[in-house]
Length: 332
Image (tube, rainbow, N blue to C red; front, side, top):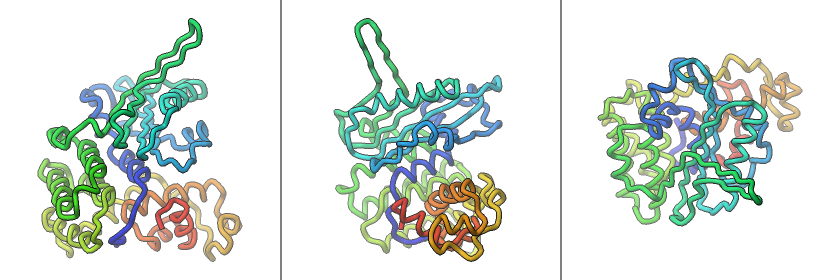
């Protein structure tokens, strides 16, 4: 059971969502995606490669970056960069930063790059759609897929039978949170959940969006979280005694943990816990690489609904490490 009230940073929600519904993300921007990409070959997220390219990207300004590898129908690789800007601030070097991502990937990995930028701020005048550089007769123009959330209306997303459109509509309500009020927000979020269920998506697909809808725009009244879950459970025909919302989320989390190899890949260690942080934990048997993988997985599992104790058990780490990692990610 996850907490009834928690503020989860939007960048973590976006990163988790992109991993969960990446094919839907591509279909939203590129309707012919299923004729271009072979999703049956899988999707790999290149977090390590992205971190090596931009080790300085750990800044207070929240942004969600994902680098993914997909396959075209002819079997060739295609790298896709997704950048979601989640802070309401104007970044004067945004276009240049997008260009830096591009040329560093090209230079180091010699890969073709398809880039997307999603801006969720409310400044209508801030729209860095491209990067331009000119010095005498030398000129560079770099453009990328660009979406400015404030340019749209909820009806634009409602007409689109796509899970990523549901996420964008949810984020749009986040821009209007201060003017909506709990009652209206409750009805809007309930309608979002109902729409997913009525459009024939599987319950597992619903679970992927549920936490994003629940946490992206929080209720002011904490009691509404429990009511919201109960009504959605009833709407989805999932009684408490038979795979309710919480149980479904936890089952899905465990499946995801197995997919990314965390339950299989981490050796047993730290049986006696961490007495003095990471160094002490490594002394107890966990390598630096394994510890890093665990600390990456902890926020993802927490966002998807897993309790601190369950995360510690699944990853075979201490409760103390889980709490320290969540605190570092502003999730405590």
